[in-house]
Image 1 (cartoon, rainbow, N blue to C red):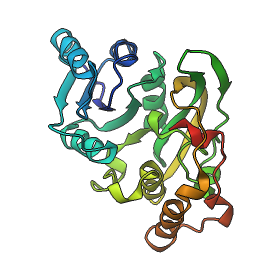
Image 2: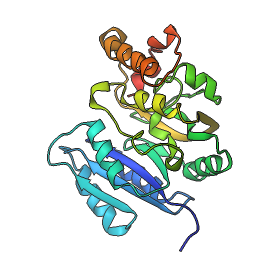
Image 3: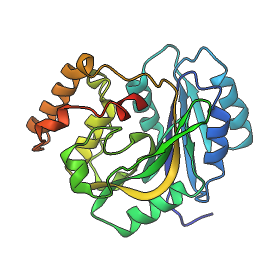
Image 4: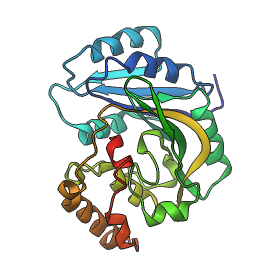
Length: 253
């Protein structure tokens, strides 16, 4: 038995077989032990689900499922959330790596800072061949994130940990009509209930699988819609510059 509160790690998987074993190994070796990993395979065409099955036989903390068809990231994340029992929710990309002390450090910070509802970390940026690109410089002050709460610009949602008891139950619900800014929509909702910031420590490794830059102009309508939601629904006073993406970090997804 442990007196540590449960952390639910949310893992939406789609064709991640080349990287999934390393991801799972690292999560299961975290220094924070009281975790459950809610892993749902979004109808992958590779060996992702077989890998999940093999790992689940060895460690009961891994709770797995497979969609009967391709539902997409938002719906798969919502299915994960319905199964999560933890007081803390930690997100993870199946193609990335969480450093061994990541969950422990995020838990400690949230426990000691009751005004904070979610905490991210800095990350190493790698190519898919594991060549180092750079280290993130995400802001460590909530105000800077509040001014530009765009995933990949002010933080990386893939490494966020949320204190579930400090927010309403429906906040962590992902909307399919906010693609490709489904994470940004969540961050804007979180900011209504407390501070969101990043630790200065590098505790996550992000692989850039598709390095080509997104066409900002092509996604501008979706971003503008998200920006409008922030003003009308969440009462954010976002500056106009928040409508323009940093082209380098926009290619992270």
